Image (tube, rainbow, N blue to C red; front, side, top):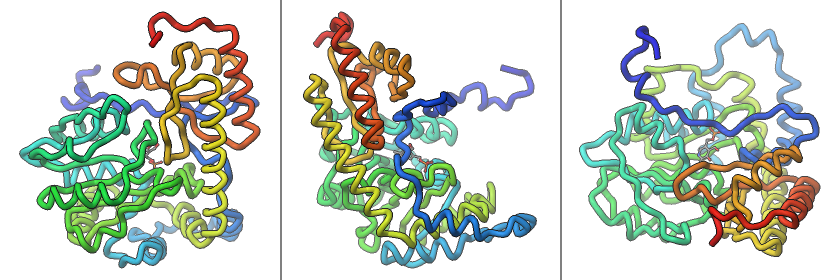
Amino acid sequence: MSRFWSPIVARLQPYTPGEQPRVEGMIKLNTNENPYGPSPRVTAALRALDPDDLRRYPDPQASALRAALAQRFALTPAHVFVGNGSDEVLAHIFHALLQHERPLFMPDLTYSFYPTYARLYGVAYEEVPLHADLSLAIEDYRRDAGAIILPNPNAPTGRLLPLSALRQLLVEHPQEVVVIDEAYIDFGGESAASLIPEFEQLVVVQTFSKSWSLAGARVGFALAQPHLIEALERVKNSFNSYPLDRWAQVAAQAALSDTAWFNECCGRVIAERERLATALTALAFEVLPSAANFLFVRHAVGARRLLAALRERRIFVRHFAGGRSEDWLRISVGQAAENDALLAALHDIIAVAPPAPETAR
Ligand SMILES: Cc1ncc(COP(=O)(O)O)c(C=O)c1O
């Protein structure tokens, strides 16, 4: 706290990003990165770049990338907004589209950046409780909302809603902006992007960080009808006109051009996820059904103990302390060898650890 701060800064509760440790030989399963690298076309495209071009600003409209995205989703470039990671895209959405008289509805256990953005941009919000099994029912949203945001699949649970449920949600909320955050949709769900021509209030958000293996490039995007995209452009051009650098634009375009690589990597992640889920269940974990590249799990030994014991073995997973997530760990799906090492470590830890009294169920 300093007397030089703007008043809002003291009130902010910033998001805590997942740890990015620098530990030799670590197994990093804590921030849902793709265990496989980006397409070789990305490497080739970046190698072909001339560093001398960096003296010039990049295309502020990212026109080529937006055209490629429009083509992938059978939309037009006017339906596409790109930003510096989907976090930035989401920030602009909160700023431009979610402040209304009535509160924004979001699940009570969801991507923890949403409440942070709501506070930053003065968006009143209400948390709609997930059911006891951490599933989300759209009937619970059948009330007067200012707007709605939810990830599909939800994070950190991994649970998926079918497209039919989202269609129903949109039918029931024709007057409110509905944001579907599809950061993990490529690992087993069906995108709501196909509903955009039909629903003028729908915004779909995706990212290159997970399924496209480009977390380090920071590229995210929103798809919506042009009247909503225009609102995002207005905020963006009042904030930072060049959110995507040249390298990021080129990397994302090259990744998009290689759908064979994309499909292969997503398929491998899905197969490993199912193998890991079966093996964790055999170790007496409760494993939520997941359509994402992570599993949300709990065990009688207790999340904090497992987290610490894994950490000692240089295996990093994620724990969201407090509230309904206190007992759970979120484990990103790694490569087969990483998953095997995780399973071996958990086997050893559980063998010697008595159940934690505070989490005994
Ligand atoms: C549900 C959800 N949305 C959005 C993001 C942001 O991703 P990025 O800013 O890397 O595009 C994440 C990152 O973990 C996420 O889990």
